[in-house]
Structures are given as structure tokens and as C-alpha cells.
Length: 112
Length: 114
Image (cartoon, rainbow over all chains, first blue to last red; front, side, top):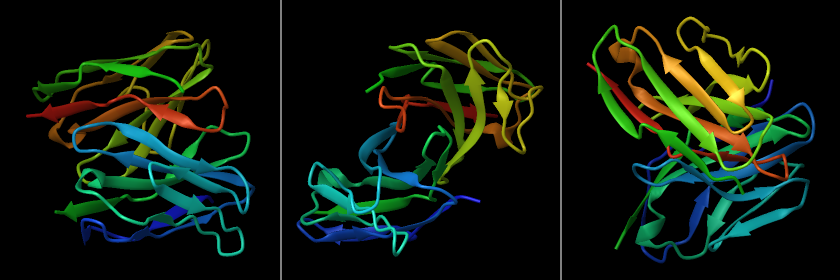
């Protein structure tokens, strides 16, 4: 079955550090891939997405590239800010279906 | 994108009681989804709510415990019945965006059962 595996957290970085959160997936078809962010006390917000192999999703300085050969969708940001402190979820959805599979979430703490 | 609201935003309930959570979407959608997020955990899909038909429940979730209504294309309710402290979680509803392959989430309902 479909599944998503994320690196465990928490990840603690200093402001302006480089961020990578690893995400790999298992899927039977041709999934779309997503990163969602959950700020403290809030619901999930769509951060970025990619719908096919080699697509790069980007938003607010974050980016992730859909790598079919390595079944990965790692999240990166060149310079994190304190305001990026949140929990990040990787997710997939098979094309044509609405059911989502979420990773376990990675908590990011950014220190000033 | 879809804008989704939920009520209540949080509640503290007594064991054995029931709580109904409302979810409103700003556009018509065929499917709406209900998730549970236990403290410090990821999201678990409870059920898919289709307008005009019975909800489809995931393994481990049953209609008697989590009855769902879907009276129209913009609204759904989830009831958590006969609550116990183990039901303390965040409950989120979601709906697809116009593009169809992404989901947007409500802000969640934070439930504490004493």
C-alpha cells in the first residue's frame, strides 16, 4: 500500500541555517506529492506540491523536487527564520483519488 | 483554494457525553474528509463524507462512534459519541481544492475529554 516516511524530529537549527527534511514514499501508481505546515495551535496549510516526476514545488523560500528514481520529495530552505518553527508533514495522493497519506511529521525549532 | 471553517474551535467535555463538530466550506465540493490528530501524532483519516450517500469509514472507525452528516455540498458534521479520555485529539475536516488533487484543511477542533 501507499505510505510516506519522514525523518524524525525535532530538528533544531539556528536562524539563517540551511534546512533539509527528508521524505520518501511508496506508491502503486503516479502520486502527487505535498508538503503541509502546521504552526502551533493551527490547522494544516498547504506549503507546496508537485504533480509529476522532476517537478519542483516552491513557496515562501521552501522548495522540494519530485524524484521518481529515488522516490523522494525532500523539503529544503536556504535560510530559515524563527517564524518557520512549525511541524512539517509530507503527504501523497494517488492521481484520481482524494485519499491522502501523511508522514509522521517533523517538528522544526529555529533559534534566534 | 478552499476556505474551511470549523466550530467549535475547542471544547472540554465530560466522559460519556457527545460532541458535534461542524465544518463549512466556501465552495461546493463532492467529498469532505474528517481526520483525527492525536497529541504529537500525524493525521489519521476517520472517514470520507460524500453528499447524498453514507460516509465511508476507515479501518478502526465505526459509524456508531463517529456518525457523520453531509446535508449539502458545503457542510458536514462529525459527532464524537460516548466520549472517553482517549478521544482527546484535534479533529480536522478537509476538502479538495478546485484543481482536485490537493486538500485544504480547516483550523481544527481541539477536544479534551475529562
